Length: 395
Image (cartoon, rainbow, N blue to C red; front, top):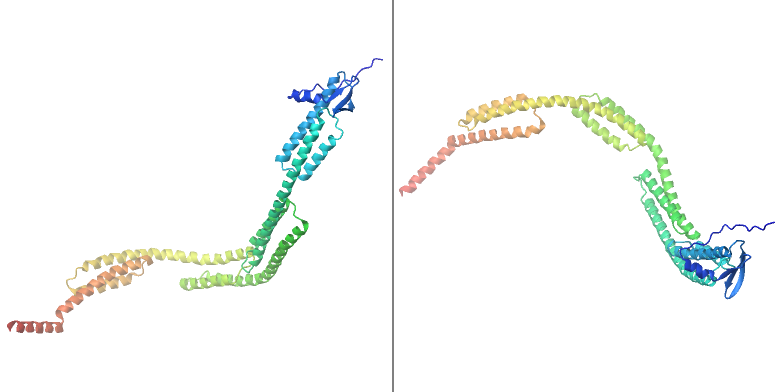
C-alpha cells in the first residue's frame, strides 16, 4: 500500500522582512522525518513534529510563529504606553507572554525575546506606578466633586423657608443625585469607608429636604382648602359687582377685592388658575361695559373740546383790550358758554386752562391799568407832588 504524506495547510512564509526570517531560521532545523528542533544556547530542544513533503515548510511555520510573537510583543509594548491599559490587563498579558516563553514552540532567537520581555516588564512596573498615581489623583478628584455636591445640598437645605419653590428645589436635588451617580460611574473607585461616609452626608441632606417638603405640603393641603373657600367668597362679590354702573365706586370695590385675593394666598395651581379665571371674568365683564361707556364719553368730550376751542378763539379777539370794562363783561359771557359745554378729554384740560388763563391775565391787567388812571387818591398825590415840585423850582 502506497504511503501518502498528508498535505500541509501551511504555505511557505512570505514576510515583508525576509532578513528577520533568515536570522530566525538559524535557531532551528527540521529532520527529514519532520522532527522540529530549536537551538537555544548551543543546545537543541525538540519542539514538535510536522509531517510535510518539504522540511522547509515546517521551518517556515515555526519561524512565522516566532515573528508573530515578536510582533505581538511590539504591539503590546506600544499599547501599554498609549492605550491607558488597566494594571490587570498589563499583568495578564505579561503572564501570557511569560508562559509562551517557558517552553516555546517557535524557531528564532528566544533568548533575545526573553530579554525584550524583561525590558517590557521593567517598563510595565514604571507604567503601573504612574497608573497608581493617576488613579490616586482621580480618586481625590472624585472625592472633591462629591464634597462639592454635598456642599450644594447643604446650601439648599440651609435656604429652606416658606418661600422656597419646592418643584425647582426638588429638580436641583435630582440633578445633584445624577451628578453623584455619574461621578461614581466614571471615576476611579473610592474606598468603601470613605464613600459610605460621603454618601451618608449627602443622604442626610436629602432626608432633611424631603421631610421639610412633606411637612410643607401637609400644611399646604390644609390651608389650601381655607384659601379656596375665601376666594370663592371673593368671586361671589365680584359677580354681584359685574353688572354695576356706579363706575368709580365699583372700580374701588374691585381694587379692594384684588387686595383681598392676594392676601388670601394660593391654593393648588390648577385650582388657583381656575378660580382666578372666574374672578377675572367678572372683572372683565364690568370693565368691558365701562370701557364702552367711556368710549362714548370720549367721543362727546372730543366734540366738547372742539366747541371750547372755537369759543377760546373768539375770546382771543378781545385782545388787545382798549375798554377793560367791556372786555370783562364779554369775558364773563364767554366763560359762561364754556361752562355750559361740559367736560373735555383729560389730556386737553391743561391746554384749555392755559389758554383761558392768558386771556384772564390780560383782562385783569387792563382793569388794573384803568383803575390806576381813575384812582382819586393817586390823582391827589400826583397833584401834591406837582405843587411841591413847582415851589422847589421857584426858590
